[in-house]
Length: 197
Ligand code: GAR
Image (cartoon, rainbow, N blue to C red):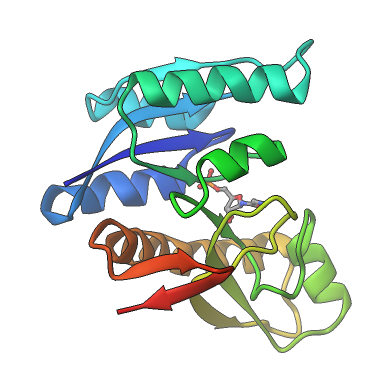
């Protein structure tokens, strides 16, 4: 049973999917940390009886903020960290310290559409498909090896919100499935690759 820390900045619907999955999964969420006070995901976690913590990032260097995060995760004996709508770039030191035990969900078919405003850019480019990716986090933004992906169609009349909702729906299936693989030791980060088996 792996001890999970989840980092959020917003409503936490992916956190909600992980909470719903954990009852019969090889992981338990033991800590939810947000850089934003009042983030919706904090209430979801509290309702589920999970310890929550707010670590504001304002007025701190990236390294100082990440050191606080790291200390809080270690204090909770966290073994795997999941970024779930956590909208802060992490320092190289933090990502290296948690290498292989730090994963993120991103709302595109990586390596396409790294960064922000993904759905707007996908629609602008008239893509016919998009999706979501769960990947190991490495220092370069959204560039770590992919563990799992899910695809959705992009419709000609899609708005960014409509596409975001369609992608979010598959995110909620993808993230628990990918975390189960990692928690079970069925996928590992080895020499920059996601290795299965
Ligand atoms: C999700 O769509 C997630 O993929 C995205 O933020 C949303 C968070 O929603 N993450 C990123 O864009 C990371 N670069 P949630 O708070 O409801 O889980």
